[in-house]
Image 1 (cartoon, rainbow, N blue to C red):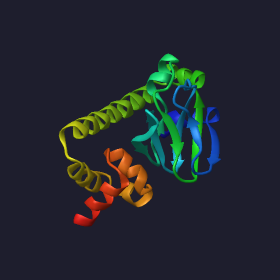
Image 2 (spheres, rainbow, N blue to C red):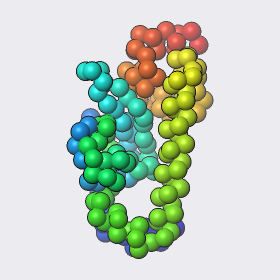
Image 3 (cartoon, rainbow, N blue to C red):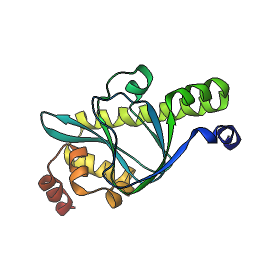
Image 4 (cartoon, rainbow, N blue to C red):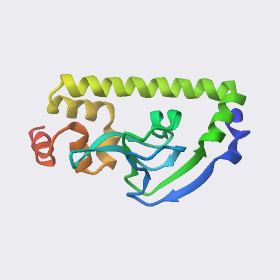
Length: 173
């Protein structure tokens, strides 16, 4: 598979970015997709003035606003780096050309998209079904690296609780 990607390496633009760099703002149209070589990113949205973290992305993952990128609609969320990062950017036109010319890349991207959909489904169901304590336990067991790399206020937002509530949950453990 690496060979399939290598033939298109010249389309990717490497960038080193500092923490708190916004790649895409809520309401903008996504024209790029990003591959994370190093770093941590969060998806967030604004709900009545409140910043809500929806998901985290790390090394080896791609990130963009899927609906915005595919259909040229305003993004529903913001993409921001949490720590200094190294990313590769790919323009929409180059992305489309790659998947047209390489069935192997198209297949890999479809699989990654499906895996991301499964993660989002699990997060959605957990948010509806589980208590904040249960969501925290799931986070510890399934994504322990998040606790090591992400500031507590983003974790609290992701869990749908206040930082004070997160502190109480952590102290009870």
